[in-house]
Image (cartoon, rainbow, N blue to C red):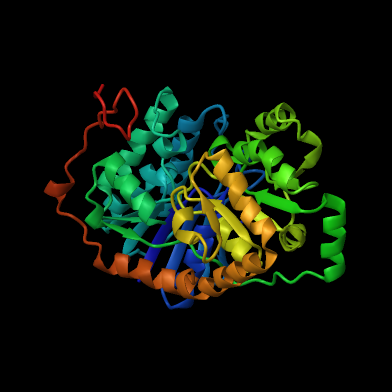
Length: 421
């Protein structure tokens, strides 16, 4: 099939897990014989002079990385306007740079590309498939109090209801999307994230040096540092963990808006000297830290899937994870890791204690987690599942695609469905 994929992040522009997912999926689709063209973007804050549109073939995928338009718009300050401008640039590229090539399907990854994806699917008269990697309501525990959150939610609702087929990365996300956007769950396909095999072996001397530098027993957590990732709960649990396992230390890698809050949390719990913030880690340093860790802890309060759990499993690291969203599907308690309820600080401390108290059992679970990757999280399998959605997606008749009005947004918690406003 001929696939036109739209994504607001694609290597080398990667913000989070979505960029890695889109790249791996596109590459896997191309590897099994599909024609894939990706509409992506150049880095934020650039323009057509400093970073012109690139049209290249990477790993069998044609990538049109579109230059930013001239208006002075900033992602952090002007999110909706910036998103519309990016979509306009993608739409122009899709209509003017593809020549005689026409897709069989348009595939949109998340709300930021909803406008160009809907427009291109309409203009080219092909089915629209949408993958939801997260939701605004989910990130804010069901509250859409800020105007920006309501704007984002309404675009998500539009994309979900306009799409001819919907994909989510976990069963938990399927239930979330169905409830939030009033889409029947039977029409939503679950296609997990996957992991690309890579070399995680690290020289023993480097692992030893990392453990000496960071301390032992060593707990490690990494990813985007935002409130919903729950690192504050891990820090709050550290005094209990250290009481049972003296000297235990925590290393945290990644960047995000929650860093100042996390530093203050460590001070408030009097463990600041036991927590090391590493910032962004290059792949080789990440591999060494994973290998050095006695436990990789993922304490998310909201997690649509949890690609970091797959990476930790691939590295052979013992896993401790909350049951939030997709993490509950990736980490099977007692089999491939140890789990606890999101936000449960005592439960988190107890789960970490299980791992530190019995390293042999932790190693057995880590091996089981790594063995599972080739079966359940193989990109070739995920590409086949996605292609099956493409093949069965049917563009609805024009009368069925009548213009949609604005969704009503509850004044209370969206998941509670209280009064509408």
